[in-house]
Length: 185
Image (cartoon, rainbow, N blue to C red; front, side, top):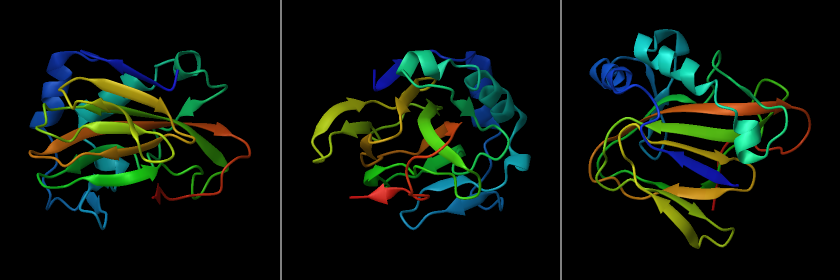
């Protein structure tokens, strides 16, 4: 299976705790991409609720659920993962996620995203290689989406409200792929 959606994934109080302790845009915590998306810059400064949710997410058996072999979660470095935010009016164009870790000999196998709010717009659109939408997944609070990263084209539709999520990537050791950055169409 290329993707899985799980509603009501985590304890609601834990999700609420993370939304209440979310770091403000001017906290110095964020890396801001050219497209306006913000992502974790310093995993040491994550709110405690984020650390606990990442621990829960790291126990998911993505290998059996997605048909992957010998993957492991990166909860230490969180390169490109952790807290993500796209503000109203933002979107992400059609892209493939990075294939390789930029510093370690790891291949990215899966992306796991936990949405923290109900977002107006901001659907995750899974697409084929031509950009044709296969499925649109609504952004709902406490909805977890996981998908195999290699060759899965996707985009984020325009957000009409703020879209916040917690992301964790699963990796394997070995060859495969050369891209250390997302590849946009």
